[in-house]
Length: 221
Image (cartoon, rainbow, N blue to C red; front, top):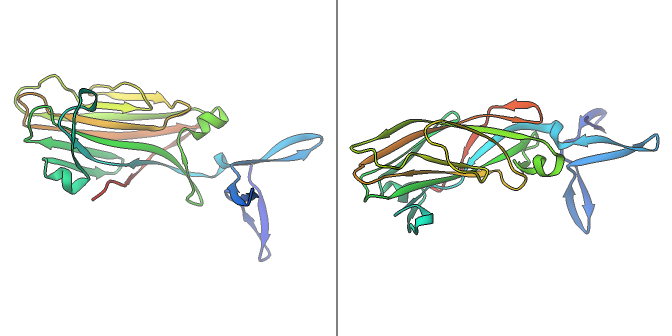
């Protein structure tokens, strides 16, 4: 349900209103009004979702996977390029590669899902799961895995919403109530000189509606 206010003799729809609380402006995510001795919901942010955003947060090169004590060597596109790493974006897909580094060197790319309202206010993807008992479904397709010389034992890893990785396939999972983030890890194993993979962020289903995500590249230059 939406609500409106009169401005310049026209009815204007109100999106994401604010209210004063403890000398601060607090955003109203849902609002009720009393009708026939009952509280009726007359506004919810779920009515004003514009699109779903996947924000790419960083690009980092490590000497090994972090759980094995890997040490970070570079952060950001320019610094990582010095370690044979690149990232490119096309639509809702990204391609990451790492080449010609010592065995076990790997690249990480962290990302997070956010809900963008029609006034450009952003809400973390887990918010409707934790606060409104809604389901947030998101899928990522891992494809075009390229490697040189011996394959080694590392497939491209994808962690999403705090869950374990998948190997060369489609991964879909419900968001938990406390997480809407994930990361990609692509690693060179013994004997490899190149590892490259494409990650396509598939449609998101939230509150029964389907959204094609928009990729926001916030990685440092």
